[in-house]
Length: 404
Length: 233
Image (cartoon, rainbow over all chains, first blue to last red; front, side, top):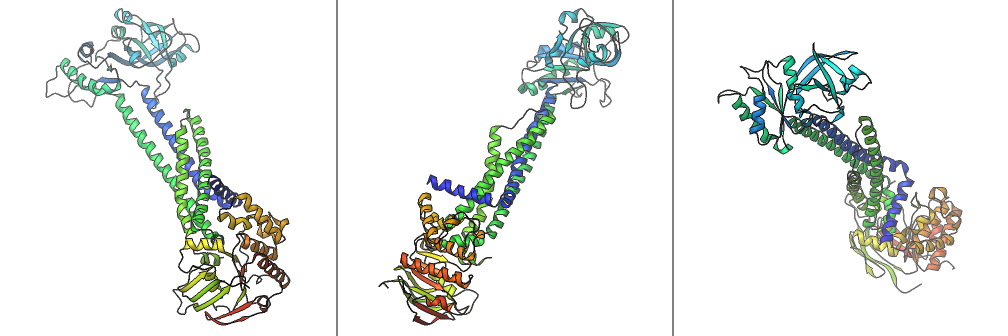
């Protein structure tokens, strides 16, 4: 039985080899279908990965409370974000691990060589923790620096390049604004550009106390960054933070919030959702292209059955049973679909590697996806090959013989 | 030649849906095992249709047909295929070899469908191909052969399954006289050595002269059946 099966396949292979034109045409549809399928899955996965990665640069376990002071779209008088708010959140919000205040304004920053207009941020040492931002050189300022209003700064690599070129900035001094000289004690690792085009590395951090002493803080902090222990607690943290903020801002029940609660995790979730839709769409298109490939197999096999009507008649006259003829044509469909699918895997893999290289994604086609696509392609081809094979098996031998 | 009849039909009729008159009308005939019979008649007389029924390519609309003592008039398509495979060999005017198969592959085909294993199949086919004088053409394609050679391959294929009934539809019709005679000689020789029954549809009186008996058909009916001269073996 085993030998008989291998012989059926052998005959199908020989038939395919002896009719190269027909073979290539049949395989082409499926090869393109399977190739497109793999490429689409790979593009989708890669695109999703890079979208999510972009958002994760911002830190995902965080909630931002932003000030409404000086915002045009806020009706009414908003109270500034203060240390009292931060303290209340630290004390009363059970799901909040850290509260980090931040104020950022534009200043000129000078070194001995250059001046660079940029943004300067006053914050606390935990800023680098909530943003999950390691140091490239030196270290972050600490609580003692904050208490003592130390004139120290931690800067990003863009600032280093603009103000110091290639030389080591740690231990050197920059002047912020007119009269705040700060010693550089650390450099943050590069995070590159965000999807918005914003350069994450254009950053100057100083202790918030130092900032307040030199530049004042008439409208309070711009935001309070709240970190939660894990993503699942984000919603709870947001629900907890709002009443605490309302209390410290002494808002009555009929007053609206005079601050905004924003979470990049929501954006990440949205981005993931959009990326999933995107991937689903691509896979949908790819599936359709695979089905079209299958229909191609069917068409060519139908043409092939029509072309070979007389041959089928001869085989039938010799004594081939309808089943044997069905098996012959199905075997050809199996061989063509399988070979076509394997060629498609090669095509898809090539396309996805090229794109992955161009986009600097890591290769993301799993063995399971590849085997699955090949198996799917083969089954599609065989399923669509069944109809023509059955048609061949049901031909009347006399009619078939007479066919020229 | 021998006592028992291999083909026995009674009142066979064949009608086609879009024709008013039956193509075969009440044909009863008996052919003994080992006979050579010529089936003659003008075109449209129904000889091909009769041959198709005798060859189990088609079933009769009415009447009975018993082949080798077995009633084959009401078989399914699958059963008729089985009977063709084991009892019947066909030779056609236009050879009907499979064009992308070699000579060897064409001749082994009935044995393949009968489930004979590869080694045995090729052994038997090679022997037959040698018998028809084409050993030097084993791996040629039909397109590389002359008409006479093609018909020799077709004869080898028709008898490779060791059928008891050999049906030839104008076997020399597409060949020149000399080649035709050679093919006829081969057929007669094979008939002799394999002790099979041979029915030949032909227009050619010369071919018919080789046969033991001639059956004339006109408008689907047998008009006369008379004995020819038996060939000297």
